[in-house]
Image (cartoon, rainbow, N blue to C red; front, side, top):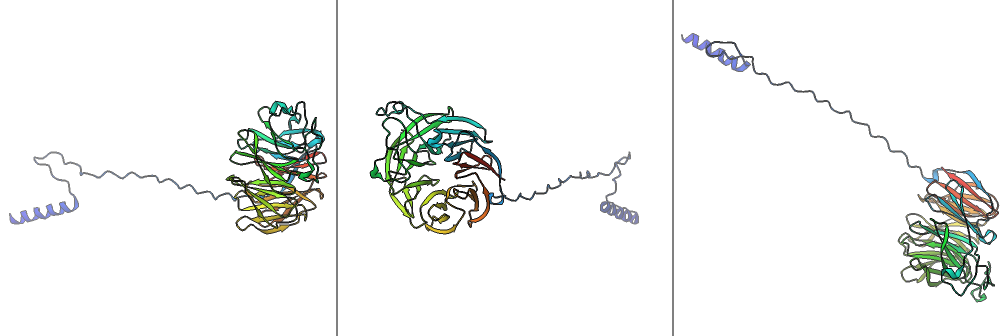
Length: 391
């Protein structure tokens, strides 16, 4: 008896250890041992390889290639791209028009410079007058464009300005036109100084600025009222204008000097960046606002100015009589027209290294960069516009 009990106890212990099926009381069929459910195999997603970022292509890595030459009844002094599919060309008194093109260079509109000044709030000038479109600048909201007129032609305008002049000469004052893009018609006229050359609109949309060549000053017009509110004395032959992104300072190239004026747009006081070169003509700001670039017409160079120190950090000769410039949206390249060399020079902005020089028609004078198409448009005073891909 004791042996049997001992054996039974050992068997019980063994079954407990290995998991034997229990015998049901009172006989019957033995139950299947309880089994743990099998684990489901979980499919792990195959990780998607992260693509390598595409290398950044800067404008300085590309090249200019002529794609179209535009002719017709034009004598363009300047070209200005809206960045929204339109380019305006100002044809001076030789054609008395502004011509408008789409991004591919097709003519969209020809706008005559004829106005009735009395219809725009100048009753002292009854009759019909013609202008002489020089430069243009788009409004901050892109709905219109302002055009400067070298002189006016008609009754009472008998003493137009000239390239060499003094305020004491008493040359006629002139006007800016505002052209509405929706109608392609002049819808506002603003009286300014004598022989307004360059025109700029502040990024905040508050002011329109015009450099008056023969009255030696800067006109400041209020966009809201369409009237001049201030004249800022600068000195002989002010021309190019660049306004910082915050609309706090206007940089004005004064060609009768070696200096660039800094006009505060808060109180209209003037300070100076001195000694940049002989006869600075045109200025552009880099997109980050750190550097200012200028052409110096008297010594035929392009200069780079560090605005933190207001010192020239580089100079380069691009050709004979460098005039206007454009800068690429990425700030990596400058494009300079060389009026007497019949060329455009592309520069690397970082070190003013010449990257490319391309030939143009005679007397290239104006230039613009169309950010919508990466194209550079060149106005040739001899009667054509040349369009270059920069890709």
